[in-house]
Length: 150
Image (cartoon, rainbow, N blue to C red; front, side, top):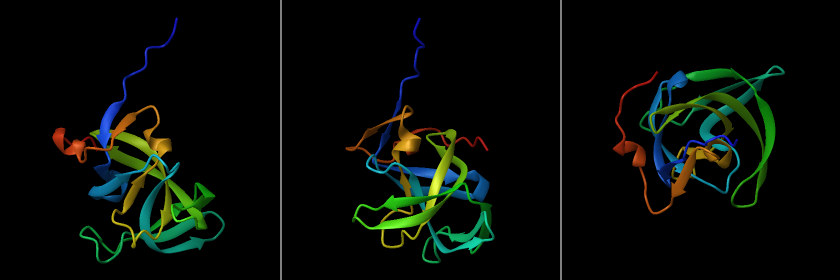
């Protein structure tokens, strides 16, 4: 007997996401099926000791920037090849993400996305088996109720 899979939810090419553990609410996120790992815009990224990272989320020009300095355990280090073909070594951290009124565990590579239009990029590792992407639509999460689950 086969297991009945829950059908994937449809999301758009852009969505609003929140990181409740970090008090970041309704950030713009680009959905990128070409990226494996999700990423988040940070600055002043600095390794502390053997297994911790210190950084500021976003940057002063962002509406929700709060100057808070984060110190988190490094989940792993990973070589990432960006869309322009440049490879870089990135630190990956774990947290929770609120997307489409659902809370998920997520791995985020920390990088300077100041030249990008959106501070968050959602990759296949988060999307697979959960979401189908309709590239002709955006911000479908706004059509859901805004009840808080954290």
